[in-house]
Structure formats: structure tokens, C-alpha cells
Length: 116
Image 1 (cartoon, rainbow, N blue to C red):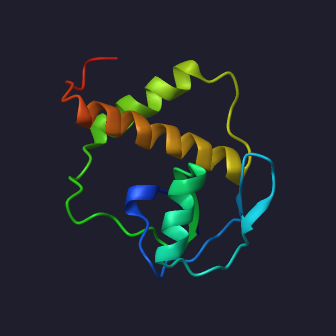
Image 2: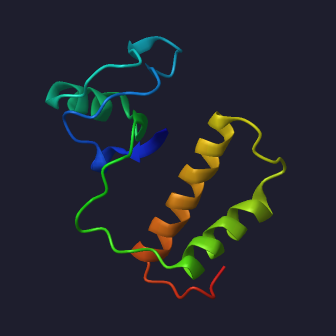
């Protein structure tokens, strides 16, 4: 099982589950590469904000638990704006990344769960 991980949560030793491409479609790193410090710098240089990691993504120890209500709110927020149903693993990953982004937005802006 792979998962999309934000740049801030990527740590050395994680393994890529998908290749990293630049904006021109050129492969920067291939699937299976073990991430080290120089890769983290490269991600920042190329503006890469997320990567797909093999296995369970490491959660930040400071990340708060997400309530089921907030998770459902974020899912509904994204579903209202999507014009398609996710059919493939890539589309599921995009949906998951969008949900995480909405949850981060709510957490960062200290919004109540009933705001949409």
C-alpha cells in the first residue's frame, strides 16, 4: 500500500512508490529509491510538495488525531467540487491528498467543523 506524503513529513529512509517527475515530464527519481537528505533538498529545489511513499507513511508525532467529523467534512467539501468519481489508484491518491489539504487548511486557520 502506498500513500501520498507532504514534503514536511518525508524523512530519510522512506521508499518511493512512484517516480518523481519534473514539470517537463523528466524523471528525477525512479520507483524504489530510498530517500536521503540530498533528495529532500532536490524536492525543495524543484518545488515538489508531495511524493508517493511505499508502505505506511510515517505520521508526524506532533500531528493531532483527526476527528471522524472533520474527516467527513473534508471529504464532502472535495466531493462537492469534483466532477468525477475516483476510479484508479492515482485518482484515489489525488482525492486523499485533497482531503488532507482541506484538513490542514481547517487546522491552520482554526476553523470550526461546521464552516464549509
